[in-house]
Length: 334
Image 1 (cartoon, rainbow, N blue to C red):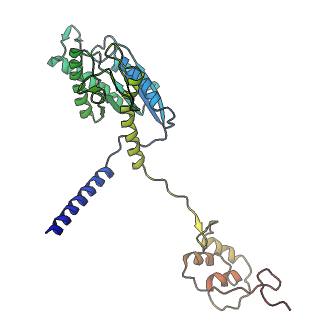
Image 2 (image 1 turned 30 degrees about the horizontal axis):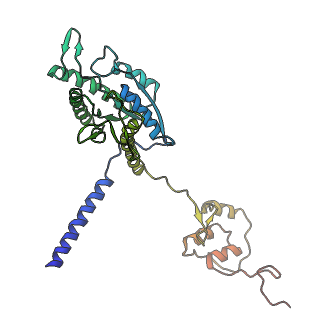
Image 3 (image 1 turned 180 degrees about the horizontal axis):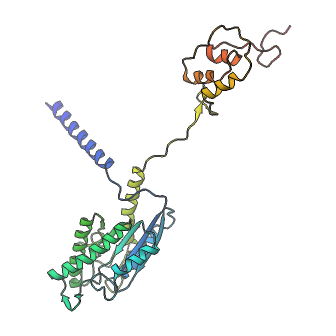
């Protein structure tokens, strides 16, 4: 009974491992494998610090080229101040973007203007107008061929402000899922028990101060930790892309009878036509020489001129008598 139970447990574990392996194997790449990825960071003042952090995280990584654009106090709820959707076409026309990192929304908890209309924050009309702006930015980046990583807004010190930004981040997460783009969570890594904390463990594991005194922005160590979250996600996707890329075919080489690389053998037809142009050689073998069973020797036999010593050697394995006095002549010295 115990033996049957043990076998059953092993069977279940084997099936689970097989399913897990199949799941990893079938993981679809987020983008194609490339030798160089053009990464572009865009957004508000938090994006400026993130851009600096990413530059430090990728220092020395020859696979990545980094650029960006940020506008302080900008967002998606006040296009009359700075219109990201209006500016994006010009940005895309002058920059090749393989991967886009978006950090935006910290200034969006305010009224949206639509002509003479005013939509108060988090009303039905405000949500509809805001979602339209978010969707347009995501769609434009995707249409340009960029793999998008949309950053969750990190926790803020002021409780009411933080609550409003949670609402905005929830909209971002929902629209990112609908658009099929990456949403990079930050709150769990940058908070203590779910609440704002100005200090924490940096990307190296040291407990340091991460946030500025304004309760919004990050110090250098905080920007590095924020950047490490998205860089880790990008590196994981790069590994998946490389694993899914087709392997380069090995160089074509021929081998001699001993498995060593050798020069490419001439085609049999070409060798035969060359042999026909030569005068017939004397031979003590009547009739056509048989083809050897070994494929390499058979190919060598096809390249030889009929009736020659080489033809007899490769076709019949007949040893060639050495010439007297040659290095391979081992006959007794008279």
